[in-house]
Amino acid sequence: MDRKNTVTGMLTALPQEGCTVLIGPNGCGKTRLVQRLLRESPSGDVRYIPFKDCYGGTADREYYLQQRWQAADEKDPRVLLSSGELRKYQFGRYLKDRPRVLVVDNPFIGLDAPSRDVFRNMLEETLSRGTALVLLLGRESEIPAFADRVVRLGNGSGKPSDRDGFPARFDAMIRELPPETLPEGDPVVEFRHVALRYGTRTLFGPLDLCIRRGEKWALTGPNGSGKSALLSMVCADNPQAYACDIHMFGRRRGTGESIWDIKARIGYMSPEQHRAFREDYPVSRIIAGGVRTEAFLYGHPGEAEYRKAAFWMDVFGIRDLAERSYQRISDGEQRLALLARAFARDPELLILDEPMHGLDDANCRRVRDIISAFCSRRGKTLIMVSHYEDDFPSCIDHRLTLSPQ
Image (tube, rainbow, N blue to C red; front, side):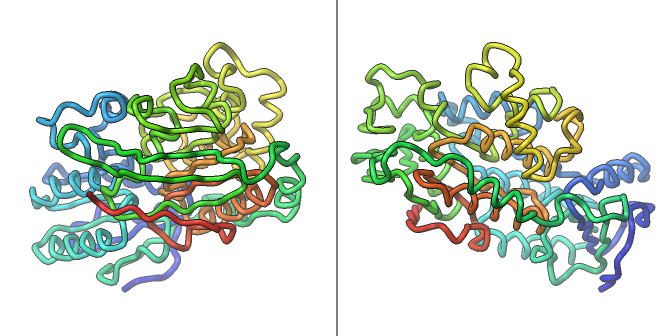
């Protein structure tokens, strides 16, 4: 295997045999390079699975809303599938066609450990049948043993990136932000014999759960076990919550509070949100718009919101993206922007569903350090989902593992 360092542009044509891995930091141009090679490649049987292509491309927003609010079209095989199950469904469709060349952007994200092993076997079998593979990766640990060549891309500048580490001054600045004034130990999320069902399928439950202010929870379980569905109940994104005995911040759902009253106290980020987020504003406005719910809903963010956005862009190492269009930055950079947006509100409850999806190794470490610093402050509560145990920060003190029904 060729593991020598290379630079952007060394790959001048789409490989027609074997398995080629493109790996490099977020924003280094992996996707742009592949898209150029796809345009220049001879016409033929080539399939490309982009980072966001799980729910059917441009239908992401509509499908996301259907999954949350209706989930009733059982004729569509995608309905009621989890994010990881949808990726497996999409992969299966392309692999079944046995294309001459298959290009996959971050093939393993959203998959639990057993599913990642199964998919590696599927890719290796496809390779043995003569299909050339091109895999775009951010994590060294995901390079498969059967890779024939590894092309490493730099950040393009030849200089260290702001994202290469997490400066100690930012860690100290986060830890010195004001703590929550409400007492620790009070219930923040309470589920009392709660179940979520669509037709004949039970996604999870019945479940009794109490998450108290100041606790840090890891939510784990295989694909399809209901992790994201549970979070949709917490985040006021699922109308079935009104029919269940759910208390948020000491108040039972459905007793007069609005969805926005709940969301104002929560910082949230998920793969579904990323795929459904289509706003085409400068990155600074995307982040500033998350500081106050009403600022994003009813008008432009003000100077105070932009100051907070600037701080969190510095923290996440994306200050250089401030004036760039959100739709014109890389998927990994979009993920960092949406994470900064979730933190900019300085929420009481931080809910992160697979926050490291599509991030390179350096950014995974940085995000983990940011979560640790944020959660070191008194009264901050965390619920985090990941299929990678190394993604969880050391502050985790509680764990809930769901099983498929």
